[in-house]
Length: 203
Image (cartoon, rainbow, N blue to C red; front, side):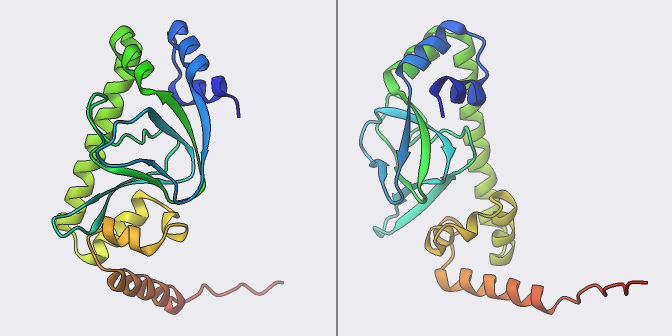
């Protein structure tokens, strides 16, 4: 993987001066599973864009329990721990699988957003995506039954349930591990009991 190729794939920038600055300063980092990228309350040094793998944002509720706020697993998603580049992280970011990210120094990202119209457009798009994901999640979690939340998660994050621990998904969907395990068992039993299509005999 080359930095310039990843930048081209993720952003499709036409501002060549911005491309040159990004290519010079950005780095591709391998983030081992369970590695913390930033802790809640710290200032981020980089904005990390997912190339592969899965990251998630974690905070604490009033009881001191860890709560999963988001998953970042689609190529190009920004693992931003705050809505502002000038504020401390409002959540901790951790890698749930071995991951690769494109890391852009926060100082450069802030400079480009303020100096390049195209970079500002991309930044606004990222904010809109984050807000849309937040609202969509809140609607699904607040309005849906446990099974509906589980089915929504499978549609929103296909295949992720097979590679991420139940405890993170259960926290994200605001249910217990026991409930999530029961729902997965019900789904498996339903698949196994479904009638199989008859095989046509060969002529």
